[in-house]
Image (tube, rainbow, N blue to C red):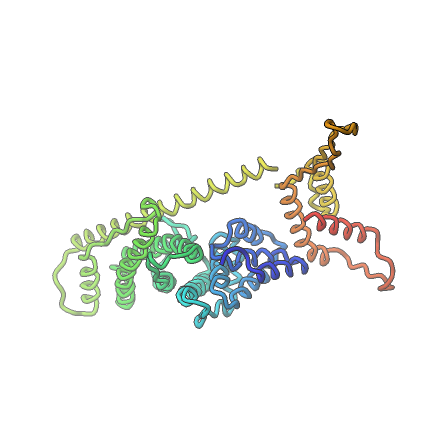
Length: 451
């Protein structure tokens, strides 16, 4: 299916009529077009999460509502948009998701419209499970593992033993849910699933980096732990080794689909002798007969293992930093382009939307519409006669964009104005309205005529 469907257009129009700009953009980000959500729509929604007058529950509900569609495209794009806002939006968005008892209930989702629908439905069920687990992790630890401070003084490296043993299994659960997406390179066949995979790829790098640092902290504390803690820590480390193998396979898929090799981190396995040393230490605490080993050899084994895992952590961190730098440069270029094209007039009156709209319309008419009136020609007839042409009009498309965004701002701030300003109710409901109300309505309708 190419282009927006009739349903997409009708739904967007309905939100335009009701004045819900956020819901309208959510619909535009989750159309039936088989491509990832457009960047301009994602950027707008990210901006919304940073605006205090935007209702975050309403934004989230709009996304949840779109997942009730029977179309795999709409549902998948709704999950992608939600994931994007969890990663790049204001933290209050993921805080709200974490506060909900339920998120996505898509464990039985199935689009029966065609073969592609059947295939993509499988990944939708897996993807929704990961997003649910990501929100649950935030609820349990009150932070996002993919955004925590890393390094020797980072969150996972400085945790005490008790908290560490409770936190690492939470990371493991989230990592399992991510790796359970379990996609092969030949299954990444369209822009929708590709967009989801890229977000998962970036999450995997940051999540595993935090996971890795937690394991380093665990190993450094292991030989000083109590017997029960050592048993729990050994089980955690064994699971970590299994997940190292799985994350390696996941990164191979990323390389196969064309992600630059420099953007894929290297994994350094800890020496196998470490596992033996950990098991021997636990056995000794349990009173079992073990091999004789000196403290020096044990310290050497631990040092080599920590060094290997630290190298892995540095590799993951470097890739993450490159991605952040690329995103920063892209944002700076976008802002520069907007400034050079002039996003909005400098004389916007932020506290008076009516004046702002009127000023904008006036600016557009005086600056952006050029009436090319040809000189009057004398009708002489014969070979020299030329018909009098009508005036030509040149419309600057930038003005339309300006009007669009001002109108959105106007529509978004109306509910706030209704609550912050004193309510003036006329005694006669059929009486005349104030001149200010008339002017506001006239300005609004005036802009609508030119959109």
